[in-house]
Image: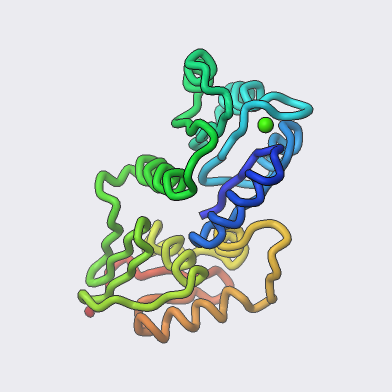
Length: 223
Ligand code: CA
């Protein structure tokens, strides 16, 4: 899952970026409103974390033009302004949720998961496909009830593949969802993680359509 973080406070930005990367998210971080708009025009994000007080273009203005352009990406406002009127204006401008600074990283992560669930139209937090279950909250993956030990990248890849069983995902699309900007990326990184996943799950769980991409079969393999 790839997120855009828009925050001009370097200390907050760095701690949010690092904390969310440890949770297995790909995070792109920009420090002003104009750079945020450039990133949003370039990349399909699953969520935007948006500070309101920003240089070059205010967060509220970024949000307003984003919605005017028809972009429905979930937006979570991060703001030091605890005035009720700011929150109301943010929500009225099309934000999905907000957090008042200072906040705990655990709470931010929980709200991100809640927004992702709502966007996916899933009423329950657990993703199930045949004998395989993936819990986005705890990062626990079980196969026929047995927990599997996955690295954060393997987890992120499996999460991306389980979002659309039967639909091949290209290497570029998977890289985009698993890695943020400037992250060290070996040319065969996706293959390496897919290989590890197939070893842990069983090869039948991840199919490859040559030249197109990888997918979890729509009909789940027997456990
Ligand atoms: Ca700020």
